[in-house]
Image 1: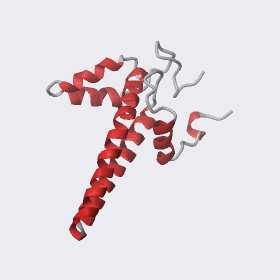
Image 2 (image 1 turned 135 degrees about the vertical axis):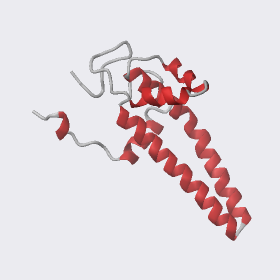
Image 3 (image 1 turned 180 degrees about the horizontal axis):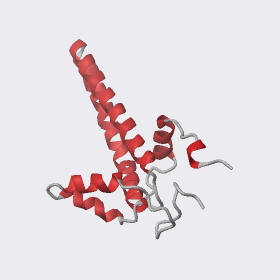
Image 4 (image 1 turned 90 degrees about the vertical axis):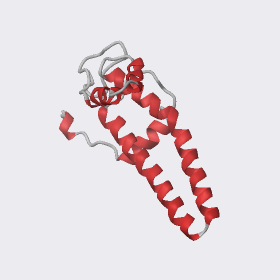
Length: 136
């Protein structure tokens, strides 16, 4: 019998590809903390890399900067929906409705949402489905 500590987690880039392909606009179900945070980290790295590359190429030739800036904007627009979807699934994993994301629009509401995202999973099945962290 394998314990939870013996299960090897997939590499972050695989989590990123999984969220962008299979879970692109899936607002149902639950997402573990690792899935949420690795997606955010890899997405930040991709965006940061595109903007830095645009800045470097802009120093060489302005046309290249425009091209990479358009690529960065395209990546940002393409990842808005999966970012929202994984955020809603993460809130579902903690037993909260996806509407709790709207708290982030209030002053200091982002801190509250950040705490929700960092909260551990509900160990049992909740109204959003079985726990991906504690399978039965």
